[in-house]
Image (cartoon, rainbow, N blue to C red; front, side):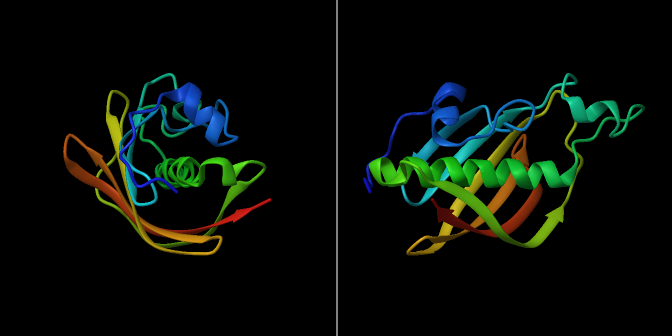
Length: 150
């Protein structure tokens, strides 16, 4: 695992790292990447998101569960990038979510930043803390555990 900082990666590279596709790919870019440690995912939230048709038509708000999923996808992409060649044929699976809190609604037009920080990794289990931010303000936070499996 390289500990050198790497360049930002775009959606195409993210799709090489994790299996998610539209409409479930919820990260557009990874930046501030410190392999094996931390990264910031970015999600441009637009009115064209399919979930806004029903959540809520008169006052569109990004569902909290999808904000947490965005955090998890950011962490999964970081893990796979960090593992390099060792990631071939593997997937990252959610194991637990703890302490999820939602501070402010995320609405169309927001740029959601997903700050993930590794707290611990042992063998194939990684634990992360994460914060979602819009314009520098924390809108959500959670701690979660993931397993890397074949």
